[in-house]
Amino acid sequence: MIPAPFTYQRASSVDEAIDLAAEAGEDAKFLAGGHSLMPLMKLRLAVPDTLVDIGRIGELSYVSERDGHVAIGALATHDEIARSGVLAATVPLLADAAGRIGDPQVRHCGTIGGSLAHADPAADLPAVMLALDATLVARGPSGTREIAAGDFFLGLFETVLAPGELLTEIRIPRPASAGWSFQKFSKRGIDWAIVGVAVQGGNVGLVNMGSTPLRATATERELAAGSGPGDAAVHAAEGTSPSDDLNAPRAYREHLARVLVRRALQEAASRA
Ligand code: FAD
Image (cartoon, rainbow, N blue to C red; front, side):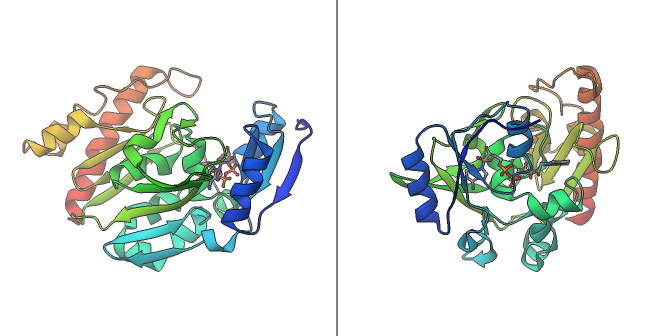
């Protein structure tokens, strides 16, 4: 439970963080809230040579409304997102999902950027980003780029971010439809989702139904063709590949996906 030795550097700006990571090379990692990275380092599943601490970069911590979208700094914590008046008024799906992550300590330390960059398929916010058609902004030594949430997640704990590339901002377009719902099934309130569902309008994101967050595309197709929640939800597990593990067998997760998608679509319809 003791991490391997590493060099610690603290950055006070985005530019400094990118420079420090570039100097340290491919084995450097950014440290945000540390709630995912530190446990991995203690188990020696992550062995970075250098940690570049971005946790005190004030310019990355904000939630603000811009032309037609909400911009969220990568260092906004789950708690700040859950309590944001801007998000409550514009994108309540995200505020609600963030407020149901882990426990208060996790929500006060964990950041949206850390959650997305970590790319754990059991995490809640990646699937919420898919349902919201979010755009992720990343900056590295060769400049800034915008990545659609649907293109960001490559596999288990794997994203398109290059070594030394920092996620700086998440942009969420104002939802066209008011209907939303977030459903999460876990054994205890503070646990990770065994399966989760994020619905915004006709977009359906799935938590923990494969090695990456997924869109329930068969359900979305049915909705677009005019089916109601019950008929569309029957297709929720099509095209998914949930794991079989100590928490739940695959068939149970598939069943949960159908049940939770139905509930989410019904709740979203009641809010539309
Ligand atoms: P860190 O641990 O600091 O970093 C995680 C990874 O992301 C590292 O590889 C790091 O290098 C990289 N990284 C961080 N920020 C950036 C950035 N801006 N740009 C590029 N790379 C970056 N999550 C849920 O979704 N649902 C839950 O129910 C839940 N329950 C939890 C319960 C417990 C007990 C714990 C410890 C965690 C739980 N989490 C849950 C995870 C929590 O939300 C984490 O905080 C989050 O996944 C990672 O955010 P972080 O800021 O702590 O990132």
